[in-house]
Length: 365
Image (spheres, rainbow, N blue to C red):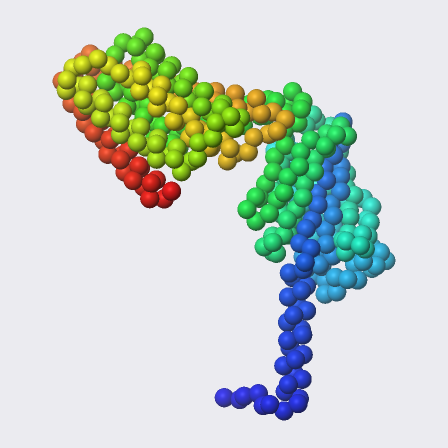
């Protein structure tokens, strides 16, 4: 195998390689990994500005000498390439449809080693929801994109997109914006109920022992009032309850409800489900609040989003009740012995599931 010698020529070759490698590293990982997107919502149009570092633009456009972009004449010659880069990286959805910015004037910001591009797009429809995907240049892990959204000349939303936050949403102050908030957050509430087996099993656990319609409605109402209360308090940050505590507590509530049901069935004693529904509902509300926090509440429509999410939770909960309760009532009226066996078997299954989730969540916390 051939080996490099130690003569002057070889040392010169190694030094040259090292300098080239360092230069290449600087070209990719520069010390200003930032970009800016400005969006202005005005009647009939949307416009703004995008500012990007020349190193990022050159990297994405395949240009070998980024610093040349600080010369306006050279930058003008490369406009087709630069616009192609922006078209591929700037992703703005309005009312669920991606807009195509029309690139206007170019400004060289020599002190920032950046270029600023003005853009404009017609938009005759009323604004409802604006979604921006980012960051602009994810090839560079530290890269961050600062986002400012203005509506009718006033700044309404600010955000930072990076490798952990890939999108930002803004709901306008129009009627259409409020409708979009309600639609989206109500849908999220319904979705969360149906993907949350712990909440589903808790509701089923409340229904399994049976009872008249009035009794079941009172029990579910107690659960609804309780989790709505803590959902609001936690979302408004009046009360803080860490998820590391709330999630195991929710699982434990399922176990305790199941044990209470079995004990009550065996002893034929007073039904305590309403009290348990309210007490444990307070804990479940903190779980719902954690989900809502992860979704990111729109600053200008906090009340609407909170109310819509809670309404969605109730709709999902009502769907479960409307399916389970009549089925249990029908089984009890036709086959009471089978119904009693099903209560015991179903409750035991709920206890096992809750215990498993409790152990799993405690270990993960």
